[in-house]
Amino acid sequence: MCSLSGIPYSVTNVSGVTYNWGFSVANAAISTGQGTNAITVNYLPGFVTGNLQVTASNGCGISPVRNLAVATNASCCNKHYRISNGLR
View 1 (cartoon, rainbow, N blue to C red):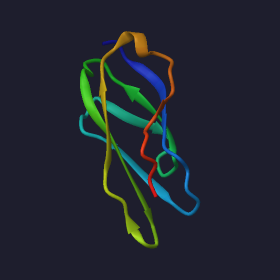
View 2 (view 1 turned 30 degrees about the vertical axis):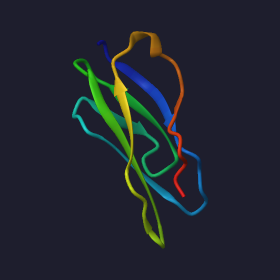
View 3 (view 1 turned 120 degrees about the vertical axis):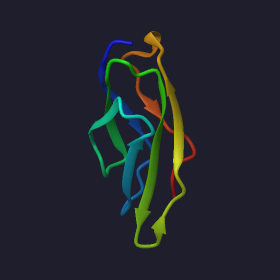
View 4 (view 1 turned 90 degrees about the vertical axis):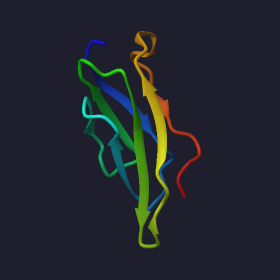
């Protein structure tokens, strides 16, 4: 896979919530939006598959981790992805 930059992902925004995003692999990185409900991701050469992970936190605690399996697929370029089952 060639590198892909600025691929957007989001969850439903909840007021007063901070979102912590991460990846299960080293060759994918959050480029913008950490702490918010919407991020952009850069996939580096060699990326094949991994899990995008997000938790939500506020004064009441931290949500369970939500995972989205992401895999190489050239036809998916330039699309916006939304993680369902909004965090509350």
